[in-house]
Amino acid sequence: MLYISVETFGAFALTCLVIELTPGPNMAYLAVLSAGNGRRAGFAATLGIALGLLIVGVGAALGLAALISSSRLLYEALRWGGIAYLLWLAWDGWREATETSPASTDGDGFEASVFTRGLLTNLLNPKAAVFYVAVLPTFVDASRPVLGQTVLLSVVYVFVATAIHTTIVSLAGTARPLLEDPDRSRIVRRGLSLALGAIAVWFAFSTAR
Image (cartoon, rainbow, N blue to C red; front, top):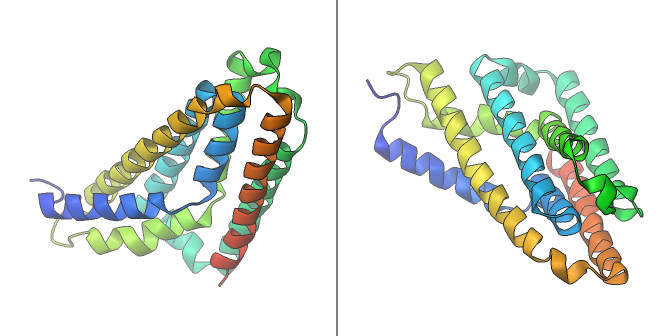
């Protein structure tokens, strides 16, 4: 028996697309990273983000997301941890980071670093948990295996999000040759960092209970 119908699959995928096209922390972070460090770094971060979303989705299937959503202490701890991390990423992008030099952006060490950042950005994002608690269940058919549906819909969400993030990385990476000039690169990088900082502030207000 199929876990979800074709109609439900299409409606959920469209919902995920609309949600992910709304500017947020992942979009801003990937734009900053890819414009400054190229597609390879952006794709590494995209994989980290995908893993983070998948972990939260599995957690939702096991009931952990509902626990976080129902506990004000856990929710607030996760929320402020995510806000602080976003602000740190904005600061890291603003400053004259040595990570932008060719010697430091090449190699597995740097890619592992940005992968970890992408992962943490989503593990510390309570909105991801709330999505799995508030939005995903509305597409679950109680007459079919709930666990199977939840896992499958979580995979669909991760797939849609990753497709959009990959597009962002590709577009931002294309602009990198235009940023070879240090002054121009600094202006763009700091502008994107300011945008990421603004999103962190918006995130603080939009996730408040």
